[in-house]
Image 1 (tube, rainbow, N blue to C red):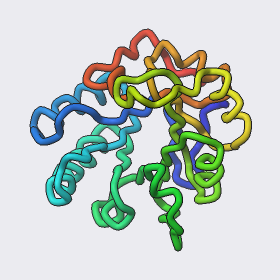
Image 2 (tube, one colour):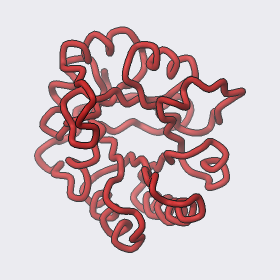
Image 3 (cartoon, rainbow, N blue to C red):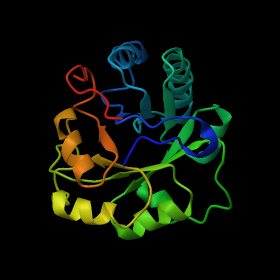
Length: 207
């Protein structure tokens, strides 16, 4: 799938989708690491900080949004829709458990990302108007060691069934990008291989 604009939001999806890692309870160190990632070329970030209180998450998010915008990057918040709206984030990432909820509406001016693991979740994300999804785990991952990997064959089959940009997640490194695209996926989503120091110099974006 070629690089595309995200609907009317005038943002070209990059091949790399960083999901933040490490301990966000140290904001200065966390933001310094995020800066290093942005300097390496990351332009799409999901702020994942489930250990923080709502107040701490909001404070970190405000700083992260400002920082990302300095690099013309987009920040998606892994939180509830109201919080994302209040903080004026670029978008929101919905975990798979949120997909089953009946949303009256999602903000059409926000980038919507959804976490998917099977065809039902992919179809639900499409129904909700998702701009992109993560599909996981493609390979074995230390983040979720007990999850059964999809493998490349099943990943390819799922990509063929839904017309939405799919980022492969789970055991991914920049070296996997050609394989992901060959299977019909869009890009790489990752924590450990993109945080804290993504090695993207030898992996130019494929137009």
